[in-house]
Length: 459
Ligand code: 4AD
Image (cartoon, rainbow, N blue to C red; front, side, top):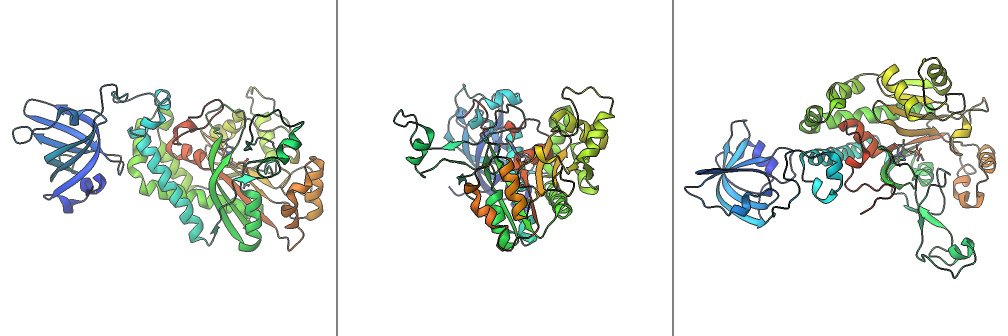
């Protein structure tokens, strides 16, 4: 169907005074005795285009003025009162009716209500804005790495090993319920891969393989976690950005992470100014000052705080936390919020965590107690990046795996990397939905992804 993007017709003055054809869904409609007006959106911009119908010259099917109906409009583009082009229609063709039970009849619905209809909420302004920011940000991430000579790697999604070693994986099987097997070993031996397989929680282990030849690589794809965490920050299927850099130590990867985040946020601010303005004004209290927050991020250094200092700071805060703070404890959301929101009010890298609360692959520090790891925490969201220098020493890595009773046989490729030309190297994992939450100010991860998958909920 030959037609133009609404964004182009609205914004491009070359079309003013010319005949144009656009297609879209009716987002608002007003009908009076002599005139009718409706606004059309085709997803190419957050703003709708206004269509004006002079009833003395054009008869329009009533169904074309119903919210949610799809239509094709031919008419003259003319400059409207707000400076953008609108269309004086000469022809309106109804493509698809939208009966009275179309659920999006009100101007604004709650996000909770919209979550019950993921297939329709995409037609609201807020999801129009979220999905475009998401798309632009994905492009910015690729551009950042490509410009800096990283190689994009597609790591496998089906895996025989659990990268984080936390056992929070989704098993992949083709057999399903059966009483034919005596035990799980027999079951999996008979299964598709001849052994237990799952969906990958992280592309890191394979990313390291690629980095040991390609130097600087990144992956950008889905990761799957069967965590029983029903929080506004967890989904079972999230998109994961994972660079892996040979010859980089912890301070180098911290610099890269900060540089990348700043590049991406700046790019989104420039390319999605309309959407960011919309988030700044339209979503609740927490968003007052969204643009200031993002500009502050771009223009200031992130803080770096040693875990041991963070514990001391929390202990001296005088705050009553629900979870106790002591050296060796994992930081909880309340602790992270205090540090990023009340103390620093900007992104903070917490470094050198106790080795017992972190993964086997992290480089062990000379103190024997901590690892060269960091989490990047941001106000409002908490952790958006998990990062570390990797243990490059064969014996130390093997020992760390043995200490955790890991099945060494499943990790022979990974261990071999420490045998043949091992180098210091580091990497991180950025949760794509988490940074989207930060940039848009959306407070629930379910609202920055098309179809959220969470505990007890899939459709
Ligand atoms: O800290 P994590 O578990 O680190 C790893 O997976 C490393 N293998 C990454 C690496 O070094 N290559 O996860 C990294 C990030 C978290 O900081 C968070 O932003 C995101 O992934 N994440 C989730 N996002 C949404 N829902 C979940 N259930 C998430 N789990 C982790």
